[in-house]
Length: 179
Image (cartoon, helix red, strand yellow):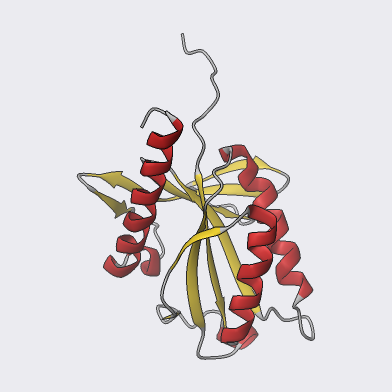
C-alpha cells in the first residue's frame, strides 16, 4: 500500500511571449514580485514555431523563459496559473491579449505546464486548471512526448530546461532534499 507523503518542492518556470519586447521585461518584474527572485532567464527568442497567436497578438512575437529561485509545492501551480491569467488580463487591449504567460514546473523527472484547456493527456488539478506532462527526463536529457508542442521539443529549448534543472538539483542538494 502506498502512503501519502509531502512531495519534494518544484522549480517554477514561465514562458512569456508578446509582440512588445518591453512588456515582457515589465511582466517578469511583476512575476518576481509574486513568485520571488528570477534566478535564470533565457536570451531573447522569437516565438516562431506557430503563427496561431498572430491574429490576437501581432507579429513577430518575442519570447523569454524564466525560472524562479524560490521552490514551491507542486500543488501551488494552480494558483500560479490563475495569477498569470490575471496579469494577462491586466494588459488586454480591446479584448486582445498583449502578452501570453505559461507557468509550469520542473522536477528531476519531468516538465509540467499548467493550462485551462482539457485534452486526453492532461490531468485535472483544481479550479479549472489542468497539468500537461510536456517533457520527461530520461537518459540524461528532457525528452518530448508525442503531444509536446514543437517549440518545447526543440533542442534549444530542451537545453534551457537542462540548465534550469542543474540549478534546481543544486538547490535540492543544498536543502538536503532527496534527488
